[in-house]
Length: 338
Image (cartoon, rainbow, N blue to C red; front, side):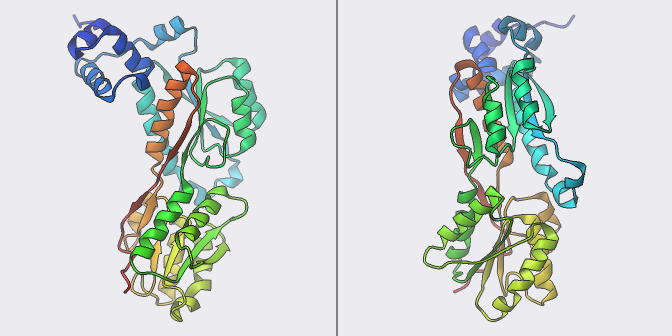
């Protein structure tokens, strides 16, 4: 017969109190990281899994956390959009890992309108919500009005006043500037798109511009994606050839693919003639002939943090305002210039 382990068994084997075991699964933010690791290591070793159904009944809740995402119309899911599916997979994997270690289960749901968000509170379908890339204030306001603990991530730099766990886009732009400036570049350019409408694009540009204080980078606000990057880079070719541009920061890695293509067609070598930095640390850059220096948006870390903070807020009602800093990833697309 298999052994049915209890909370008290875990406590005894981990050398903690039964109350600590409960907090590890219900309020991990109140337990030291060392004790959390110890309890979960024991649970994995002996195959212990808390009874989530019984726990939700005791709390008189649903036992469910929703990961909520905006449903995109069929016409909007083009080849460019599909190239970013990896970020959702990274976010989902990390959220699932956090929720699996709690007394809750994870459910996925799409919404098509703000009205659908508002129904979540009335229908009592979950105990907490993680909004995937809910950057619009009207969406965040609808979620806030449901009366359910929630957190919005990750393009949420401008959602002040709402629960959020955002990736600091402006800091990412500053990192790109620092990498180029520190390697001796003095004639920067930035290729972007949708600068007025897209907050992430705007903040990346502002960070890059501020990072080159006293030397305003040349700005090209063209189209996003491979075709957009290709067209924008063609407009820069004459400036690179004449020595008026020695480096380019591109708003994202997918757009940078088009930039590299255009420079190659113009017989401009990266990084010998011009250095290039992307943004996102997307898996697609592994296919490029030159290892692209880029900014890692740490999506997984952002959503793991969001899920942990939500679990804490579900028990004590605390506000959530986390800012996650991106990380510079070195590549062969930058050449030191003296």
